[in-house]
Length: 327
Image 1: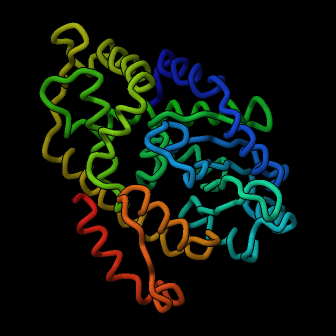
Image 2: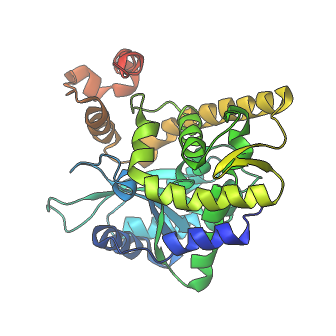
């Protein structure tokens, strides 16, 4: 499903030249400096971009788009920014992109922000924001508010914009079975945020989709208002009243089953990524603890045994947290 021209321009106006976020731009420059010429573009997303309740511990979330993995990781190693062998980390990036790596920004010993980087090749980034994607990981993040904070050249910037516009356009294709009989742009956005968040096991409690809508209301209303009007003009939606739509083709049982299978596959692949993040993400345990504490309001005091062997002894605590997080 190619993005309509009007949608692409609406996305481009908001992601390619938004009001500059000085902190994000500085963080992106630090990532690009460490990653070297293999870095083609950096896309800013996540809680710091959407302002959906970030705190002082919140990292800058970036998709780091590279032309080749090994030179990028070699450059990080040369800057002392990667604690694992670059060949190993590059090999883990290929079968199940992206890799997640954490970078501390600023000089050694400084108290400064961190960047959480999802590293992906240009080819994989384009594929995973298209109808040929293998799961929902990229679309679930990039259908929201983003910003291209670095591009090596104009071609790299336009490739990133095209991918982001595609991620927005595809929301209609995967949310159709869960839309109510009649909906406006707010209902459309709340529905796809809720459906998307249910596709992964996440530390955020119930209500995160509503918080994301509240934080991004202006952006989502503007961009997806364009998409709904374009779909209506193309005959995909029926206009029942001003700004109120319905499906021209009701979603059938086969479509619902196909998309349910897609989300289950996505959840399995997202969970499998956790295993490699333990290898690629330095200080992963402290990062997860801070994230869980931020969303739950609880402090987590691990035993020496849990800290020393988290992959063996931390599972009971993980299952308890996931079971009770909505309380």
